[in-house]
Image (cartoon, rainbow, N blue to C red; front, side):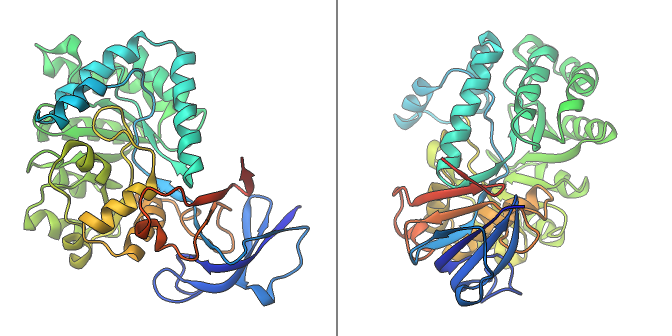
Length: 391
């Protein structure tokens, strides 16, 4: 066994209130000892046990690695023209996904994997150590299965999203496409996935279709999550809570009943907010303050995708959440780490505590507050993933 001590940490966020101050379990003048791929010890620097190697943080802040619980990284092409048009006055609609579907179907496996790895490296350099990613840009049995196979080689958090939109091949037969998604496609995709998702929205799938897809996925052993209430009010949030989905993602347009439902289901269904999408579509911001004050559990993620949120930066999303979604810096960091872990139903990530996976980010700043205080500045200066310092 090999141990490494990170010493002289000016401010350590543990996300464990039993270890330090407040909800973030903040420890000042701290140290962390890593043993192989786990956290072995956390506490004051002057009480740190001996280790085989040491890394001096020089008074800077250390936080848990970011947990990005919602992304779409298996794709080809980009949608620059669509973004340009949107910034020039056009509105965002679900149908733009078809452009990426065409490019993804035309790409080779090697091209898709290379693009995935490029985005993973980009995210890791910004402090992300766990990511979820989805299919949804193939919309045929073979293309959805290969997307999940490629993703599963690089993360354990893989989501079957055959129900992203109705495939262009079934434009005149949406019921037939639902049958495919819940039948042959599900059978081919389930072995590679942990989760099943559906875009429950006008222009995608209605409540009855979404229920059928999620129920079939659950019967195949996949855990539901839902793209819910992004573009309009709808049944997505209520369906997520009813089916005990791990998360309802987007949550932009919520009624009081939706907020109450998420608050009552706080231990089961996380409200995952994706401010990169609102930034990139000039849409209404989700009201994080309303959800948090009601008692809902909130996560932050990037929604990295080529159409509506082409960012892999969790620090950027934290800054947006603080500035435009009325979160405090502490709440935003918790949501981007421990909140994401909750959305993935994980207890081994999103925290810096003995027994947790050794996923850490060192900031070139004295405090995690600088993530929102200095937006756009590349503050992550070192990352440990499973106990190994990434380069």
